Length: 402
Image (cartoon, rainbow, N blue to C red; front, side, top):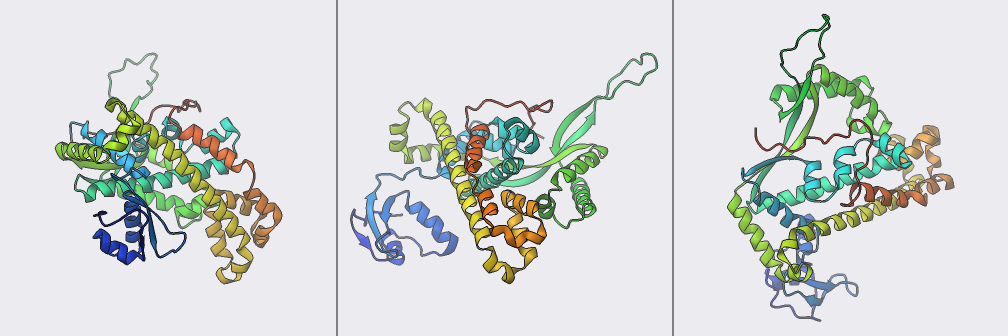
């Protein structure tokens, strides 16, 4: 990108002309949105007066770190550059934690909705919605980051299925009073074989059908999720497994990664020096920034989702006849808070969702206060680790050598 033809105060009549000035290709859709985000790192413009025109307000001396992905890129490159084996396998939750997007509470307790509800008195549907939302949100952010590095040919990555195998410890045991000694097991993490993946898939399909559903989406939205996972856990244990899970399998060459990190630091040199005067504080400072940005991003997204939920409820009568009852049960059921309203009112009263009591339920004043509390518990980096019982053991989510 060449910004030498831009001057502060000048107005460029439209997007196509701006592309010509910058030496950029004309794009559309998501490609155009990504391109505009990239431009925002090099200059600031005003489009309030004329939505087609670009009025240049400021041209930056060097590209700016403006997005969460920008910060994450530097930290991930730093993390990879310190690994000697040029390959890592990390579950997404451990990777969130390594990048300082979340804290240990999220890694350990992300699916313990009921226990968190009991510990905090926050309604269980709000706990569930919060943890599900940020998991989906950060998974997309992580995908964007890894795709960016792969497009630069710095890494190759893929999602791989792993198993936590229940393996018996073989030891010579003296039998006392002819009583059988208790068997002892260890948890062994390894890649799942093709046959094991087929078994796992078949197991899930069978349980979904037994519960009267056709997909995981309806299992969760109907409230049968807890029963599903309870059955799945028992049947997996009979097969000799604790659980199955996915990891990001990342392969890289150390020298190119180190060079890319150095290039990025030089690229943002002025910004980094102004913010972190001592180079040794740079990684710590960037991680702190990532955590702060994660909190802000989550808060904004949750507010937008709440507003969207209210709009759906308020617009329901006009669209009801067009889409049909089943459509709205599924669509509104995807949002835990709105689904809670549906469950309380019952299907016969679905059309009454626009009633004052239903809208007030979604706009409950404490709603955002609950989320602010959950952000402090699960994202803020200096939060205390919460104890939820006997299962507060650190999960082995990092496997580097097999």
